[in-house]
Figure (spheres, rainbow, N blue to C red):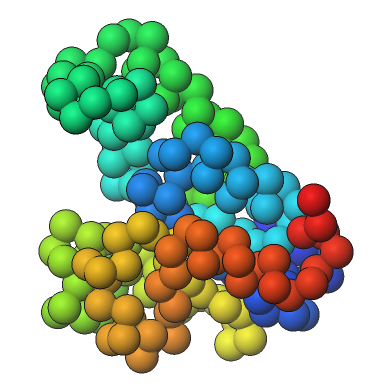
Length: 187
C-alpha cells in the first residue's frame, strides 16, 4: 500500500509510510483541516478516509463552520443553506484533490474487518477503526497506521493499540510530526 507515499518516508515512520485515517471531526474545523492537508502536501503522511467519514463531514461542516451559537448550529444542521452545502462540498473536493483518488478506504464494512473492532469502541465510531484495520492489513510492517480523531474517548485507544493502530488527537498528531525535526515541517 505504497501509493502516495513519499520516497523519503514520513517522519513518524522513517523509511516507511505513515497512514492516517482522518475522522470527520479532525477535518471540519477550517484551520485544522488546512494544517492537516498542508502536511499531506508536504509529504509528511498519507491521509485516508471513508465514504462514511465524508457523509459525516458534509452533514456537520455547515453547522460547525457557520453556526456561532448552539441554537444556530442546530438550525443549520437541520436545514443548511445551499451556499453552506456548496461550501462543504467545495472543501471536501479540495481535500480529495490533495489526497488523490487513493484517499478512500473501501471494504471497511466487511464482517472480517468489523469483527476485529474492539468492543469498547463506540458503535457510531466503529467504522473509523474498521477503516484503520483495513489500512493496517495492507500496510508494510514498518509503516505506521493511526487514527486522527478528536473523539479518542470513544475509540478505546488501549485496545486499538493492540491492533498496531495508534489513536491520536489532531493536535497530538501535528505535535508528533513537528517533534521529529523533519525539515519539511518547518514553517
